[in-house]
Length: 423
Image (cartoon, rainbow, N blue to C red):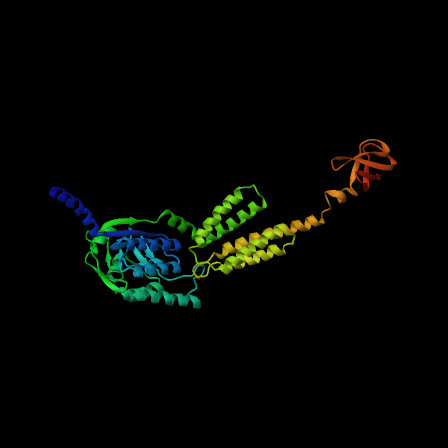
């Protein structure tokens, strides 16, 4: 019995040791910062907290991104109960623009050799005029944000202001020498070992890190995060929304085509998946839907372009108002191009309608009266003529010869009254 108890204890010791050692979660923030980055990071930090991780190492390699998404990530890091160590990694990586704010927000800021950070001047999408009052406000706000983060962690406050106002950048060695970052590490594993015993600020308090025996677990972006990163670009989401609406409209207009409906449904679902992560202005979305409805209505109602052109105006206004933040916009060339194509289509449609009204009737009673036919046989009184590719009964009080041309002057049921054409 004692031998069995000893065996159980021996088997349990490694498990207990592993549990007490704890876990360090390594996450990767790669590419432009956007809604997909926020979704991935916030969920990853929540999972790390749920599994009682001791440390989260955030690998950073980004050229920048959206200000609204950057602010969300900064808030998530500042409120995380698990300490976050930001590491610009691997060699050749950068924490430019938005990446600088994220690195500053981490309780531990580190860089690998041959990496750089900086160039943190905020630029509104489609604008770069720093003399604009709104641009000056963004500069002041961004500089204050970096100063607050630098003060919180005892880092270089002045350089943060220079990164915003002058677009300054630093290499890893320069950043360590100027106290912009805390240390240089060659890899996440090396950073974890170097942080053992280090006291860092987490939330409203301080923690002493114990990282010597941590088990490293990687938490890379999932396929949903990668898909969202691809389609959450405002221009891509906008195009998917248009393809979705028009695809379904064409399918309803011509049931059985299948392809427009299939492509439209897939595009619309992807657009809704992207838009749920973007700050949507519902007034703008409503104007877009109204514009599309008016343009579709033009194809069914002979409004001579009034509905269509009104739809183009509503659609363009909705496109400009679709997103309710200054750093997320559908590009003006794309909106202008879409509006121009729609307007061109309806101008062409109006021209076609005007030409159709000027044309004579091609079917029915109106098309037969006054039409010219050819006599098929010699007759006086009743006989037959060829008219519009058909054989008709005809009557005429004058004698007619075969192949003589005649003109229809009256219709009585299925019999035509004709008179000979003068040569």
